[in-house]
Length: 397
Image (tube, rainbow, N blue to C red):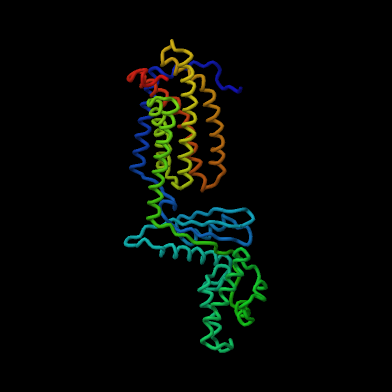
């Protein structure tokens, strides 16, 4: 088996353990201070905002889309490819901006989505105010047709025009949906039931076929953001409680569970503090990263605790502190190799994952480092301290 360290005998459980504990407590206080003073940079998932899903005829350039939308002065814009590569779909998200006296409605969301479409229509060369059959709503298309079919040359009685326009609009929207939301040629409209030649001529001369289709618009209000934040706290809290119960039952002593939870609290606090200190965006992927850190850290801690328990049964005549120190040395090579491998993976994600994966990768990088550190210098020393001040009754198995 690959070993980084052979027959090590580092003295980690004597006076030096208090140095690491003091450093850890100071780091946690600094992290909490950063969170209180600087706060968090919440993303659209928590702060609210508008998301617009678009399907393009050809693979879009994310860089070009970002440049166009930045020119529209929408604020912080997130552009993400979704679905399969051949779908050519992107999700554009714009964070909500607080406005004094504004109500929690979708008014702002509607304004932002309209500005996104106008900016992209301008990029595609669609005239402002023009009719794009790939993004127009059924009601708008109905009104547009009604206004033109009511002309004397249309040849229909005025009373029948609204109903006819509604029928035509519904038929065109249905045809568009059958083709994945995109009409690529006016020839697709030929022969559709309910679309007369007069309407087809109007569409050919007065409408256009944009390069993208509107697949959906979603507005996340502040109330939904607060509810999501509440559920995030509950998820992390329940995860910690579940881990406490698991460790308690596995090792049959509450001191083992408390030591493991103290290490987890240390890891999550430092990771969250690093996010606050660097101003990186807190989003749902970052929440997933925090929960991943919990899993990574407790896995490493369980390995160390298992070795301590085995050695306690094998070397009953030795001091508890010596057994813990020997167990840490025995698992040190495994801890370093596992952490280094995970760190390489998240570092690659950090360097090449792009702007939107940067917060997640950064959080995982911090979590891998502090998770490995806490298993050795937080959980194990707390076990030794508990044994010293509470006695073997509460610690040994």
